[in-house]
Amino acid sequence: MMPILFKGWFSSLGIAGVPAFFFMIMVATLVATYFAVRFARQDGRSEVVVLDMAIIAVVASMLGARIFHVLVEAPDYYGIWPWDPSLFVRVFYFWQGGFVSLGAFIATIGGWILYFKWRKQPMLPYLDIMARVVPFILFFVRLGCLLAGCCYGRPTDFFIHLTFTDPNSTAYHFYPNIPLHASQIYFQISAIVLFFFMQWRHRYQTFHGQMVAIFLMYYGLSRFLIEFLRGDEDRGMYFNGLVSTGQVVMIGFFVAGVLVYRWCQKRYPVA
Image (cartoon, rainbow, N blue to C red; front, side):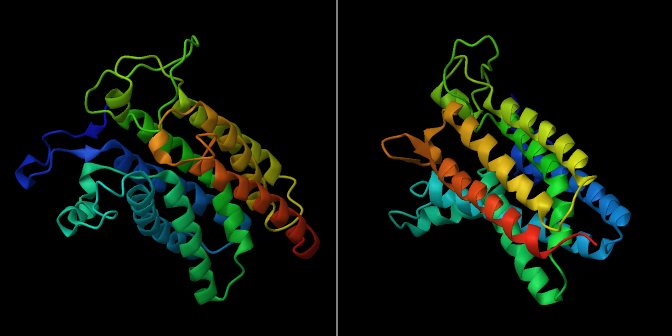
């Protein structure tokens, strides 16, 4: 694939190119922001608040994605454990890649919660708007994963598969020229299905927080299942390799979705 984009464009700055994952996060943010503003206008909500949320998402997602990668996937490479100040400086080399979408998501949600506490505005209607555009982010982020060769699948003889031949891709280092499950594409298909389902369900929304709850349940379940087909075990494995860090978190997502649904259904009806 193409883990590095725009090669040679920034050679005068000593930068080989732009990591595909980094670039796709930017594209995802722009596309999602456009539709979020559009949906806010349709729902009679503040476009300024939505734009503020987008800015928070850009900053928080980059920091969260980086921190999650450093702490979960490669703490030794960055001198975290064991501690090595000479290696720790690598944490700030963003242009070399190394991001985790789950960390971006968690950090963004945390940033939004703090923002609405500061603004003292109702958060659920805006989270419902964002829940409807998150599938765009998931789609483009997984496109970044595909280009970078990360989040790759397990070896397979299934007729639908991916083979990574670029020595710079992450998958090539572990499974060079070996057919792998197209896990990145599975995630993208799941995001497309989620987007259209969310737009349809919004037409019949009965309470604030409903879109958030549906997203948490759908994403939690779909990612939990797709994770079984992933082959990048450096993302953190537990119970003798039975489940990954992502799957543990996704169980929490699904449970949270059920709780949010039940809680909001009784308390925040749509007027």
